[in-house]
Length: 176
Ligand code: CUA
Image 1 (cartoon, rainbow, N blue to C red):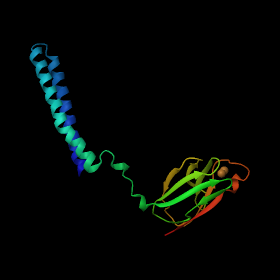
Image 2 (cartoon, protein in one colour):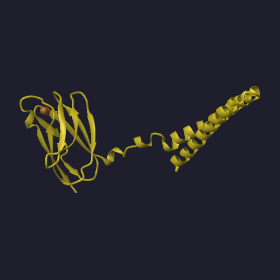
Image 3 (cartoon, rainbow, N blue to C red):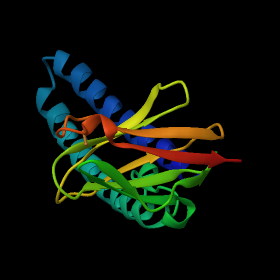
Image 4 (cartoon, rainbow, N blue to C red):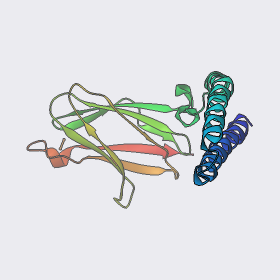
């Protein structure tokens, strides 16, 4: 509703700008009576500026305070709705604090490394890569993913990290 209101105001203000430009363009073609038209143009411009201030400032504050526009899309679901998984990569294993997850409920993976760079990749049962993120020492990278279907998913390392890189496997069990 607020979004619609903001949109209507935007359209209105853009229309005013277009009309102002159109008037100025029409006026500039007439060579005679240039002076009065110019002063009328200035008058329109100053009225337009005042109108912008009078309308724009309340709209700006109103949308920011009451609807958090234009940042509505940044309002992610509250943290408690996520299933949280802390993942730490080590040479050569994954340390996961939660391996039983629910389908159709978003999961937030917080991924880091205890030693060197690893790649945290999640595969489905037919070994198709679904999503991945870097596991880096000193950083926690956040990756969000929602499993659609229950089943067993594999975590594999995607970055060569030494001798037993290929042995860095883990399993996630996703239930209804
Ligand atoms: Cu860890 Cu490759």
